[in-house]
Length: 188
Image 1: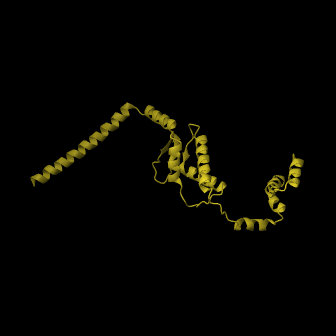
Image 2: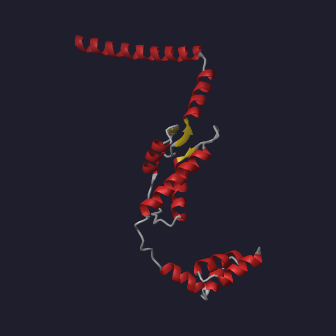
Image 3: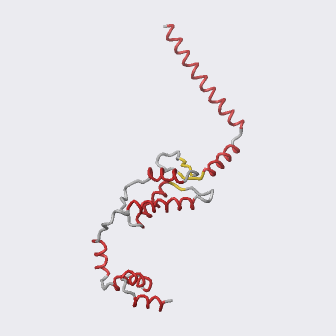
């Protein structure tokens, strides 16, 4: 296998193929050796070069969106697994970086991602946290149904009636106090 790669590298006129084979042969500084650059010179050249082709950005973003949706779908295939919007946002940023799309690290894509997920994956539900500083959770609708069934099976009907009775007593006392205050004011 190694001899075949070396023969391909020696006989091809294409620089990209030679660099790729050199990377397979000796990872690390292989592309710099192939292009006769020193490692620091290559880094400087890579830093200076700018992308001028911005026509493919919408196409690349749609590929990133599709890859994220597929990753979410694969992750949520188990009923026990949940994802947070922070994890989804981080995954989206890493996918964008992998495809070399200009990314603002401080930018929050959560609103866009929420809309994208709700459009492409209607079976995924967003569960808001009780705490304000925690992100929403993504779960399958079947998991929500299972959780509600479990909660209702754990809760006793007598317990519900007892809570309603306590609330009714509190409301009754409050209403009596208000009517007594109104009657007292009218007498004065």
